[in-house]
Length: 494
Image 1 (cartoon, rainbow, N blue to C red):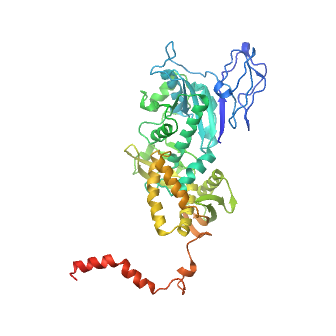
Image 2: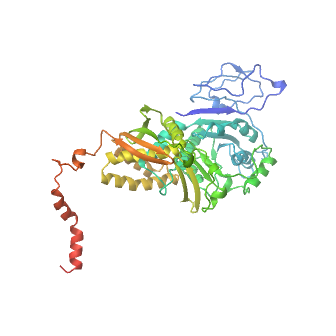
Image 3: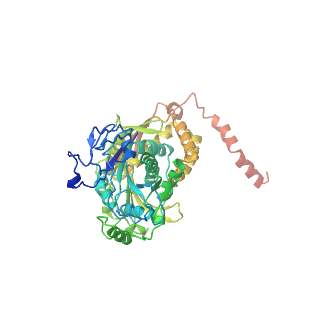
């Protein structure tokens, strides 16, 4: 089970209602969280959906044994911000009770919080998934959510689940979209959306919301996951509803609702980062004729600036899934993280492509996938030993459809799940190791071995073999070429 952290967003108490003792604004707990005889003033509101069994006395004393693995603080306040509702608490567009918002702390999701409260008269629970985007992007989210008007912030660490249950199945399947794209964003959205559905159940929310635009693929990926896992949840997509047309409008809305958003008027690139990749879109990249700037890249060095000496590494694989690096067994997320460092140092995994979005338009994106590129090379190479010709052909044909479904957000579709079962079965003996040379942007296979290898040196050798008689080839060729021979005979009147 992933780690869950819930951050309290209580306003600071006044002097007249001060707590009887000092409590940190939030605290980490490595296991089930308990509040032992913690006294709060009567004016303090507790979050029953997080506190579980709460016993309230004259002093509002709370105690609880939580089912979640780890929770960071347990209080819930009203948050700040302006909420325009009627006397019955109905927003401008209707009434929702509680909404779980996919929250990044950026401009879009920061203004969505007050917009949801204003338009749906609801409590907003912000949710952030840690999928390996880096600690810097998680810093200060509590303060930002509070300033935007959220009642609480929930953070889940999904890195191991993301790699093990989403990335590795795609890797095993050999899924690549339109010859280049290793599906970094496509794989991350369903694991985030699934966690949102879980959080909605935990906090008693009746709706979920996201900040995806109406032009992109992510809106589809989020919502298909919501539909698949809880069709009763209402879905709010502000970019398809509100009058905000761009960053300028969003900044003005933030100012109007006293939401501090530390942004400039103009962004450079639109980026999405997780443990698998980093994508870059927008600005000069919108013209496919423009070469990306050298300082745009963040996960990899320019191949020209990479070390002048190659580096050799060995990837251990079991049943089509990577398990070790240079003989050391690592967890899925740790293995990928280490390969990102090594691959990035050698300028591995840069892709510049024009792709066909699900919604019909073409878009240009630049992707950095250093560790993923290395792993793809290793896994595909080992299959050359363990899979026969017909199996490889069928697997490769299914990989195209598999990639298309992941790209389109159909992760929980029975067809993808069925194909995944096929991929798992067909690669059950793809076990062994692959040695690779990394040098100035290139990945070269130098060795591969497997206890289940179908390669037989005694058969393939140019030396004599008792198993393979070269004279047998004559009859095989005559039968294999018979259709071509008959057609030629027909054309020549023979």
